[in-house]
Length: 176
Image 1 (cartoon, rainbow, N blue to C red):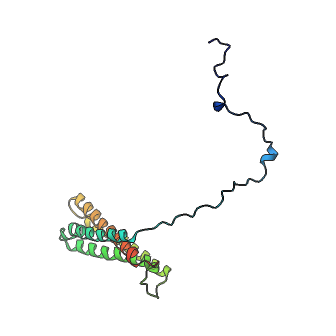
Image 2: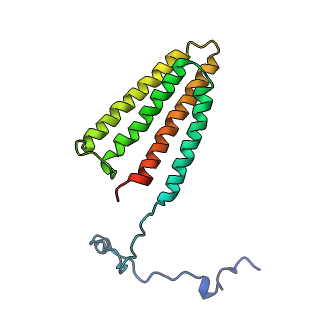
Image 3: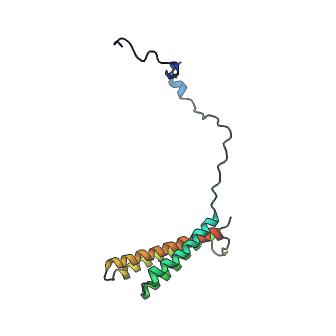
Protein backbone atom coordinates (compact mmCIF):
# COMPACT_ATOMS: atom_id res chain seq x y z
CA UNK A 1 0.00 0.00 0.00
CA UNK A 2 1.48 3.33 -0.98
CA UNK A 3 1.25 6.56 0.95
CA UNK A 4 -1.12 8.10 -1.60
CA UNK A 5 -3.81 5.47 -1.09
CA UNK A 6 -6.40 6.04 1.63
CA UNK A 7 -7.57 2.79 3.26
CA UNK A 8 -10.87 4.40 4.29
CA UNK A 9 -11.96 5.51 0.82
CA UNK A 10 -13.72 2.32 -0.12
CA UNK A 11 -15.85 1.95 3.01
CA UNK A 12 -19.20 0.22 2.33
CA UNK A 13 -22.31 2.43 2.57
CA UNK A 14 -23.59 0.68 5.69
CA UNK A 15 -20.60 1.97 7.69
CA UNK A 16 -20.50 5.50 6.29
CA UNK A 17 -22.18 8.44 7.97
CA UNK A 18 -24.58 10.50 5.87
CA UNK A 19 -23.67 14.06 5.01
CA UNK A 20 -25.91 16.65 6.64
CA UNK A 21 -28.30 18.15 4.12
CA UNK A 22 -28.62 21.52 5.84
CA UNK A 23 -27.50 23.14 9.02
CA UNK A 24 -30.21 24.66 11.18
CA UNK A 25 -29.95 28.39 11.76
CA UNK A 26 -30.13 29.82 15.30
CA UNK A 27 -33.55 31.29 14.46
CA UNK A 28 -34.93 27.82 13.75
CA UNK A 29 -33.59 26.47 17.05
CA UNK A 30 -34.99 29.24 19.24
CA UNK A 31 -38.64 28.27 18.76
CA UNK A 32 -40.69 26.30 21.27
CA UNK A 33 -39.59 22.73 21.82
CA UNK A 34 -42.42 20.26 21.67
CA UNK A 35 -41.97 16.72 22.94
CA UNK A 36 -42.81 13.91 20.58
CA UNK A 37 -46.29 12.42 20.89
CA UNK A 38 -45.95 9.10 22.67
CA UNK A 39 -49.61 8.19 22.54
CA UNK A 40 -51.35 6.64 25.53
CA UNK A 41 -48.89 5.68 28.28
CA UNK A 42 -49.52 2.39 30.09
CA UNK A 43 -50.78 2.72 33.67
CA UNK A 44 -48.21 2.54 36.45
CA UNK A 45 -48.68 -0.68 38.41
CA UNK A 46 -49.60 -0.21 42.06
CA UNK A 47 -47.10 -1.38 44.62
CA UNK A 48 -48.77 -4.10 46.64
CA UNK A 49 -47.44 -4.99 50.07
CA UNK A 50 -48.36 -8.45 51.25
CA UNK A 51 -49.66 -7.95 54.78
CA UNK A 52 -49.34 -11.64 55.53
CA UNK A 53 -45.57 -11.40 55.16
CA UNK A 54 -45.52 -8.31 57.35
CA UNK A 55 -47.51 -10.19 60.00
CA UNK A 56 -45.03 -13.07 59.77
CA UNK A 57 -42.11 -10.63 60.20
CA UNK A 58 -43.88 -9.10 63.17
CA UNK A 59 -44.39 -12.51 64.78
CA UNK A 60 -40.75 -13.39 64.18
CA UNK A 61 -39.80 -10.05 65.72
CA UNK A 62 -41.84 -10.76 68.85
CA UNK A 63 -40.24 -14.20 69.31
CA UNK A 64 -36.77 -12.76 68.71
CA UNK A 65 -37.68 -9.97 71.13
CA UNK A 66 -38.47 -12.54 73.83
CA UNK A 67 -35.07 -14.17 73.28
CA UNK A 68 -33.29 -10.81 73.35
CA UNK A 69 -35.21 -9.81 76.48
CA UNK A 70 -34.04 -12.98 78.18
CA UNK A 71 -30.42 -12.49 77.09
CA UNK A 72 -30.17 -8.75 77.66
CA UNK A 73 -32.35 -8.19 80.70
CA UNK A 74 -33.31 -11.34 82.58
CA UNK A 75 -29.84 -12.89 82.65
CA UNK A 76 -28.30 -9.68 84.00
CA UNK A 77 -30.30 -9.96 87.23
CA UNK A 78 -29.95 -6.33 88.35
CA UNK A 79 -33.04 -4.38 89.35
CA UNK A 80 -32.29 -1.29 87.29
CA UNK A 81 -31.73 -3.48 84.21
CA UNK A 82 -35.28 -4.78 84.64
CA UNK A 83 -36.60 -1.23 85.06
CA UNK A 84 -34.74 0.12 82.03
CA UNK A 85 -35.78 -2.84 79.91
CA UNK A 86 -39.46 -2.85 80.81
CA UNK A 87 -39.91 0.94 80.68
CA UNK A 88 -37.99 1.04 77.38
CA UNK A 89 -40.15 -1.73 75.92
CA UNK A 90 -43.39 -0.01 76.98
CA UNK A 91 -42.26 3.29 75.48
CA UNK A 92 -41.08 1.51 72.33
CA UNK A 93 -44.48 -0.14 71.97
CA UNK A 94 -46.45 3.07 72.52
CA UNK A 95 -44.45 5.23 70.09
CA UNK A 96 -45.60 3.43 66.90
CA UNK A 97 -49.13 3.18 68.31
CA UNK A 98 -49.45 6.93 68.78
CA UNK A 99 -47.60 7.70 65.56
CA UNK A 100 -49.86 5.45 63.47
CA UNK A 101 -53.06 6.05 65.47
CA UNK A 102 -54.79 8.21 62.88
CA UNK A 103 -54.42 5.52 60.19
CA UNK A 104 -55.57 2.56 62.28
CA UNK A 105 -59.05 1.08 62.30
CA UNK A 106 -59.27 1.29 66.09
CA UNK A 107 -58.68 4.94 66.85
CA UNK A 108 -60.32 6.92 69.61
CA UNK A 109 -62.20 10.02 68.48
CA UNK A 110 -60.49 12.33 70.97
CA UNK A 111 -57.04 11.98 69.34
CA UNK A 112 -56.31 13.93 66.20
CA UNK A 113 -53.40 13.13 63.92
CA UNK A 114 -51.34 16.02 65.24
CA UNK A 115 -52.21 15.25 68.85
CA UNK A 116 -51.30 11.60 68.64
CA UNK A 117 -48.03 12.30 66.81
CA UNK A 118 -47.25 14.98 69.40
CA UNK A 119 -47.62 12.31 72.10
CA UNK A 120 -45.39 10.00 70.06
CA UNK A 121 -42.75 12.75 70.01
CA UNK A 122 -43.00 13.17 73.79
CA UNK A 123 -42.61 9.43 74.32
CA UNK A 124 -39.64 9.40 71.96
CA UNK A 125 -38.03 12.17 74.03
CA UNK A 126 -38.60 10.09 77.19
CA UNK A 127 -37.02 7.12 75.45
CA UNK A 128 -33.94 9.22 74.64
CA UNK A 129 -33.79 10.34 78.29
CA UNK A 130 -34.00 6.70 79.33
CA UNK A 131 -31.05 5.87 77.06
CA UNK A 132 -28.99 8.67 78.62
CA UNK A 133 -29.94 7.44 82.11
CA UNK A 134 -28.86 3.91 81.11
CA UNK A 135 -25.52 5.30 79.97
CA UNK A 136 -25.12 6.95 83.37
CA UNK A 137 -25.91 3.80 85.33
CA UNK A 138 -23.97 1.43 83.14
CA UNK A 139 -21.02 3.81 82.97
CA UNK A 140 -20.45 3.02 86.66
CA UNK A 141 -19.76 -0.66 85.90
CA UNK A 142 -16.17 -1.68 86.53
CA UNK A 143 -15.53 -3.32 83.15
CA UNK A 144 -16.32 -0.55 80.67
CA UNK A 145 -17.10 -2.92 77.82
CA UNK A 146 -19.75 -4.75 79.85
CA UNK A 147 -21.65 -1.49 80.35
CA UNK A 148 -21.51 -0.64 76.66
CA UNK A 149 -22.59 -4.14 75.70
CA UNK A 150 -25.59 -3.87 78.07
CA UNK A 151 -26.55 -0.51 76.57
CA UNK A 152 -26.25 -1.91 73.05
CA UNK A 153 -28.38 -4.96 73.93
CA UNK A 154 -31.06 -2.81 75.54
CA UNK A 155 -31.10 -0.54 72.49
CA UNK A 156 -31.56 -3.59 70.27
CA UNK A 157 -34.46 -4.72 72.47
CA UNK A 158 -36.10 -1.28 72.24
CA UNK A 159 -35.61 -1.00 68.48
CA UNK A 160 -36.94 -4.52 67.95
CA UNK A 161 -39.97 -3.74 70.12
CA UNK A 162 -40.70 -0.60 68.13
CA UNK A 163 -40.29 -2.35 64.77
CA UNK A 164 -42.37 -5.39 65.76
CA UNK A 165 -45.25 -3.29 67.03
CA UNK A 166 -45.13 -1.05 63.95
CA UNK A 167 -45.28 -4.10 61.67
CA UNK A 168 -48.09 -5.57 63.76
CA UNK A 169 -50.14 -2.37 63.61
CA UNK A 170 -49.57 -2.00 59.88
CA UNK A 171 -50.33 -5.62 59.01
CA UNK A 172 -53.35 -6.14 61.28
CA UNK A 173 -54.97 -2.80 62.04
CA UNK A 174 -54.15 -0.47 59.15
CA UNK A 175 -57.22 1.12 57.60
CA UNK A 176 -57.45 0.64 53.83
